[in-house]
Each structure stands twice: as structure tokens, then as C-alpha cells.
Length: 175
Length: 417
Image 1 (tube, rainbow over the protein chains, first blue to last red):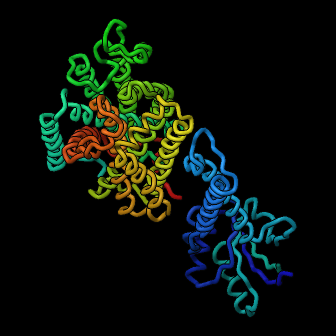
Image 2: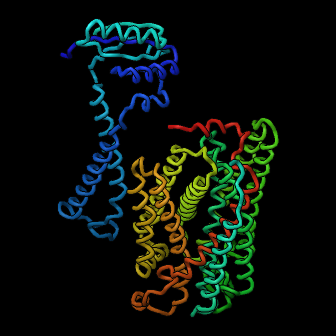
């Protein structure tokens, strides 16, 4: 079972308010848990100082794996296991292997990236993810703070921050 | 700085390149050991096809971007336009080549030789007689010079509309007008370029044909044109022009080099594998010659044009950095010049050694200008590059660098990913 934790979040009406609120939070050294938006907001990752995704490295590793699988398997079949002559070509006819190698490279890297992405995000069949507010997939922009282990003064500080930064609503929720 | 000035120093540099080209051309012309100066004329053909194609593809990219409602390219629109305006010069090159066929200055095209279509002649060639409806001198004139002039019309038209745009207050009307003309050019250019390639390049190996060849050549032009765009934009940036170009524009151009290099490899490999697998003698001979007698040309081609851009430009950061992107653009531009070298030279070389056996041809020493490009050949290429740059920079200085009334200009300036 997942541990429960307290979250304090504010809802903003548009992305410019959200962006300025994030900069303000950065200035005050507040520790943002996450930001939820209904659509990708340009420049958000810069302001939040997010690291570049490492998913493409996964793609490269799985692609290389697919390439080696295809080349190794075909070479083994056509030179060791069941040597067959096609159209007078040599057993190890590399050009003929290239299209299949290409296909398996793409297949492995795409399936690998999707699976790893799902695992990182904790998605999958039967998984229930807590939702802070239904409207964050519609027209609200959400800025959330983790309030676990925070004393009352810290929570009040966050509340005054929300009030100053123009949040339309402020809610607390345990997820 | 909104207006590019073509300084006398830059002009002198392009003239220097042209002078180098002419000197190298003369050395090649008079130093040739074969009759009819085949080394000179193959170089001439190679560079003409290469630079004319780059101009054609620039116009094509402009048309494709405009029709696709693309916004990001608008800041470099004037650079692309200036590149496409080199087309009429290409028509002059091919006019020279056509006159050369008529006047027997060169024997680049075996189909144009005396008596190949004449049954009574000793030179009679049944295959070439069968191809006579396509491969004849009138078609050569129409499908090289004629087609280039037709494309030039579209280049001129789009430029005219673009300059009109600067005078008015809103660009929507001119934008739609440009779209109309470029929409006509898109299918016309796409289909007719195949004929241009067949007549100018593929018919050097007159007996051989490949349906992939036109695609493959166009892909080569595409990469080269984007490389020249990258280098020109970097140069302009360096001189303080086009400050609107940001990292994302460079990233997009880098992605183009990366993607079109892979596209080129895909077509190169498709052409190779289908012919290799089918093993039809009259088709395999093309690769048999190139792999057997010209292995340096053949393998380095694949190395520069596929392995290098693929490995270097795979990461985002190498597409952003000016050093790595500039290095790849320069190398790949040279690589595709090399690719055209390999398309043109072996066919002619083989005709020059028609009497020799396979073993004899394989044992022949490496000849500069045939087996690998010699310094004079590279010098001739630089001469053509000088002329190309002269034309492009001249047209670039004739209009503001930013098309300020284009409907997409704001989107382009704020391009960010």
C-alpha cells in the first residue's frame, strides 16, 4: 500500500499566473512538489528547473539490443542452424539482413521506451492514481506542495504565498 | 541589422574562389591524358548537377514549408529564396553541356555518339536505339535547360511576390498568392526533377537505369541544400545579422541534416539491395564497377554521408552547438559532392578503358580525378561554390533579411521548443 501524505495545492486560472507563481515560489525557496496543467506549457521545464528526460538513453539501449538480437539470431540461423541458399547469395548475406535488423531496432526501442515510461510514471492496468482535482485536466492550472511533516507555521506560509500569487482556490488534500 | 551588405571583401573572396576554379579547370583541361578532356567535362557536369540541384531543392523546401503552414522557417526565408535564385545560372551550365554534345566537345553521353541508333553503322547499339525516344539531344535540351528555366520562373515569381510583401502593410494577400504559385510548383517540380536527373546524370551510364535513382539524387541535394543553409545562417549570425535565429532554429536545421542523411542512406541502401538481390546482370554492373574499381569512392561515401551525421547529430546538444553542427554540415556537404563525383566518374572511366579486361581494370593504379578527387577537382568544385555564393549573397543583399510582413514572422521569431 502507498503511504498517505498531505498536499496543499492552489489552482490558477491561466498559465501566465502559474508561471509567475512558480518564479515567486523559487524566489522564496519553497519546495514545489509538482505542477499539473491541462496542456503542455512552453518554458515550464525551464522555470521548474527540470532535468532533461533520460528516456532517450533507454531508447538507445533497447534499439542496440534489438539490433544485436536481429543480427545475431539471423546470422546464427543462416550460418549454423539451417544454412539455406537464396538466389545464389552467400549464407551470411548482410544486405538482406539489414531491413529486418532495422525493423527490430525500431520495435525494441519503441516498446522498451513505452514500457519504461509506464513504469517510471507508475501507470498500468489496475493502477489507481490519486487525482488532486478533476478540473486540472480541463481549465485549471495546479501548483502543489507536499505538507507532510510541516508545522502550522509552514502551512500558513504556503497559504499566504498562494494568496499573494493570485491563486483562485486553495485546497488541502490527503492522497 | 536588417539589410545585408555584400562587402567588397566578401566579393573578393568569392571572386578568389572562382579564379581558383578557373585555374584548376585549365590545369585539368590541358593536363588530361585522354581525348576530349573527359576529366574536365565530368567535373563540369558533376558540379553543374550538384549546384543546380541545391538551388532547385531550396525552392522545393520553400514550397513545401509554405504549403504545410510552417512558421519556423520564416526568419530564414530570404536565405532560402536567395539560394533558389541560382537556378538560371544552372541553365547556362547545361546549355554549355548541350552545345558540347552537338559540337563533340565531350563524349560524356554514350547515347549521343555517332551512329548508335543507326542499324547500318558499326557503332549500332540495340539498347540505346530502343531508348532513343527519351535519350536524344532535343530531349536533353528540353529536359535540362528547359526544365531549369521553368523552375526559374517559379523561383522568380515567388521572389517577386515576396518583395511585393515588403511594400504593403499586411502580408496575408501576398502570402496566399505565393501559396498559389508554390502549390503549382510542388507537383511540377517533384515529377519533372526526375526527368532532369535521368537526362543529366543517370544517362552517363547509358545502358543502366534505376527507378530509385531520381529519389536518391534528390535526397542528396536535400541534405546538401540544408547544409549550405546551416553554414550561411551561421556565417550571417557571426557577422551580426539575423539575431532572431535562436537555438531552436539551429536545432530544427540540425534535425533536417540528421533526418535527410538517414533518408539518403535509406534510398542508397534500397537501390543497392534491390539490385544486389535481383542479380540482373545489366543492373548489377553499376555497383560491380563502383565496388570493384572504385572502392575508396564507394565506401567513404557511405562513411561521410551516413555514419558521421548519424553518430554525431544523434544527441540534442550537438545539434544546438555551433561547432559540432558546423563541422557536420561542412563534412556532409563535401560528402554529397563526393557522392555526385561517384555517380558521374566511373561510367566515363569504364568507357575510356573499354578494351581492358576486368582483372586489368582492377590492377590499374589509382588515378587522381577518377578514383579519388584530386586537388584540382576539389578546386573546380570550390570555383563553382564561389559562383554559387556570389549569386546567393548578391540576391541576399537586394532585400531585407527579415520578411517583416509575412503572417508567420512573429511565430518564427518566438520559435521555441
